[in-house]
Image (cartoon, rainbow, N blue to C red; front, side, top):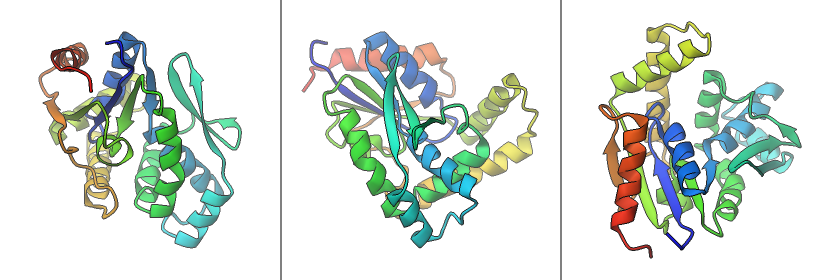
Length: 225
């Protein structure tokens, strides 16, 4: 692969796309762009300010008065908010739900759209999110949609939280996951769905390495644009 490609990986929460995207980027020598972290960064500030997440006037002010930036750290784009590295503060279920909520508003998506496109302007990037192949990079060289059943995604999230010492109950995780799915798929603006022309991969019975190998095989079979 001499040409530096733009590869997008979309999918619902818990499908494994973050881990797959990170490993894929490492294997290809590309930059990994976790676009959900951008929304989480902005949501983190909104939560810190205690502002209503559906107040369009306050969201406009938030977007106008907040600096969200991306910094390349060992091949991964990390998010800073107003100069603060928030990477370790945005990975909670609360911030995830808040990010999903504010992402339904055009003013928020417009603020972050150019930042995402600039990161992929020179190619050599694996961009992961929920509208990468449909909105942010509609002309991406390769588009993938990583999916899994709801039960499998709930189980994976439960194991992930357990590994981090979080004993959250399955019922609680299920409620959060269902609410997140409804918000992401039901929003009018850029709803979660497989992008046109995307290769859909169901990861229910595949390991992370098998999914990565599947994607590399699909890329290798095709001639880059």
